[in-house]
Image (cartoon, rainbow, N blue to C red; front, top):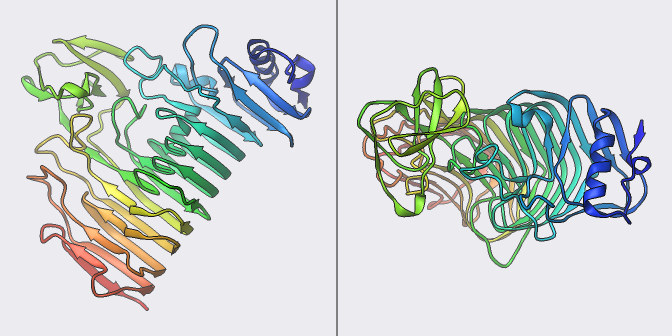
Length: 424
């Protein structure tokens, strides 16, 4: 067991010296403790490797400061993230982090990893656990926790406040998000299998997850949803195809995305297939980034359970299964097949404020289970996406048990039919 204080990680030291000292301690692996209470300032990114448990004892708070390089990375990241190599068995306990007006400015077209934008970022990681985590003062760009390309993660006992997403997951298999309190202007929890090209490092299926015992704390204003579920579909690259920012293609054994200016809404003609192995390259004036080293054609979420959660904030929509179609991202390329999001379970969801629609879906969806929910004045809404010509919406089978529904609870579009099965 290592005490980081003995390496010079101390409340009275300057941010750069503290960052160096904590990194030296963490580089040893094993269990690393910070025992002396106080406020510790850090300015540089801390990289965590395999088989490392980092423990911040009671009374320890970390406060971010600007990097001396002028480029702010993430507060914490796993060592393999930048190399595309998996790290395993990482645990962070008791981290209380104050953003202090600092967020990463290293997630755009010139970044190390496009779409990596969080205070705690874990990309290519298995057997990750974050316990007793507090993060306050999120600004408009950084998530508190971002995890993608993951296998088996546990995020427990969270308290996150600020403007951006609390927990933002990309492609991965096996997760638990539990005992969380969120007061965020944007989504507390985002299961974004698909997202803007500058918001996700990977696209792919998010599977086998549980969100439990979480609270959407009341606040004066908000956007987004308590939980957002995003999917997408795309095609194989074709000569002469029209693409925009965030469009996705499969070609040459890889999956690529377009990185352009979303605000101009321009379409670009692609005549040369991207073929580089990693990073970003330009073809025909179009920037392409590699996001997977396999040819994938769809993504989404399946086998997800949300249970024992309280919605205390007034929202238009609590949980959204969404399809995007704007200048920032098209969740599907016209003519592609959207594989349905499926096996979504909502159980013991308590509505403590006015939530106009508890569950809204404008993406093809199948197999929803509802248990122990009184909808009160809230609704279930199954609509079709804007510009959804050509998308096939299968019938949504909804299994219910101990659910209180009212005459106006279920709202559907004729193209997005619903079959209710009662097991009360």
